[in-house]
Every structure is written in structure tokens, then in C-alpha cells.
Image (cartoon, rainbow, N blue to C red; front, side, top):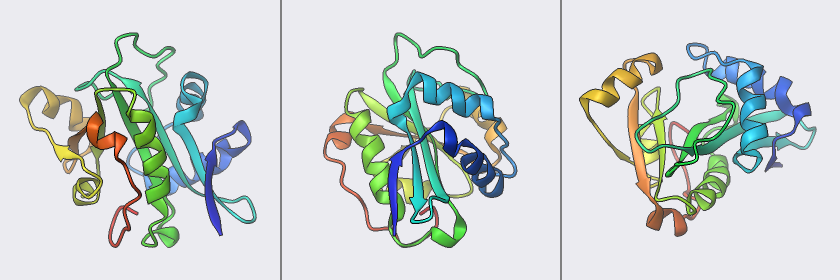
Length: 178
């Protein structure tokens, strides 16, 4: 049995180990996770098994629409003019994917997004179809292309409007990304 719960300081070792495992091309340090937990604790979740092992995590926080923060950046503060919830990461250990486990975590983040006009994210590793099933749509543009370079060649900027976030329901997953 696994369940989503609030991320704590004690979880950081497990979260970073999992992040290093699932995102070897996008390393982020402890300072980034501590910063997000301090700035927006409600957007920091872990998926833990019965033994307390971290098998997934999610990080989201308010940001400016169209301005995904650079990877591994300490923000220090949230923008006063935040108009979107940025889903920084939703990650599950490969052996825990495919059973719909991400749906509850994503639904919790989308419930937070209802306070903003939109939710946004950067899809990596070809997961855009997964995010499309959650109501996100790809947004293109020259300015965005420059911002996405650090996220790799398959990065896609995606947005979901607030009305859809208010109606968020867990989606049964059956493929990559879960």
C-alpha cells in the first residue's frame, strides 16, 4: 500500500535519491527542495510505501504563466504576481508506474491550481501524451523554445486552465509517465 502525503524534511534524502534516479539528466540539489518546501509546503508531496520508503514525489508552486523557473534554482520568494501553479515535477520510481498511482497526487496539485487562472508544466522524456490525458495542452513559441533548452530536446511547455483544474479527477493511467 502506498499513499500520498505532505513532504517533510526527513523525506529529502529519499526524494533526492529518487530524483537522481529518474532524472539523471536534470540534477537538482537539496537547496531547491528545501526552498520549495519553505515557500509552498502544500505543493510538496511524497508517495511513500508501508515501510516509509519514498517511491514518488511531487513539487508544485505559484509562478508566472509562461515563465517556468530554471532547473535547480533557489527562488527565495514566490512572485507576488503569480498567475499559475507550476507543476515542477511529479515523479514515480519506474517499478511503481503504471498502476494509476500518480493520479491522486496530480489531482491534489490541480486542486491547488484552482486558486490560479492556470496550471503549467514542462513535459520531459516524451510524457506530453500523459499530461494531455490530465487536460494539459502544448503551447509553442520562440520565447518558450529558449527557456526549454535546459530541459532537453523533447521538452514541451504545457498549460491547463483553471476551470479544468476545479473539475480535476484522478485519471486511470496506463502508460508512460505514471
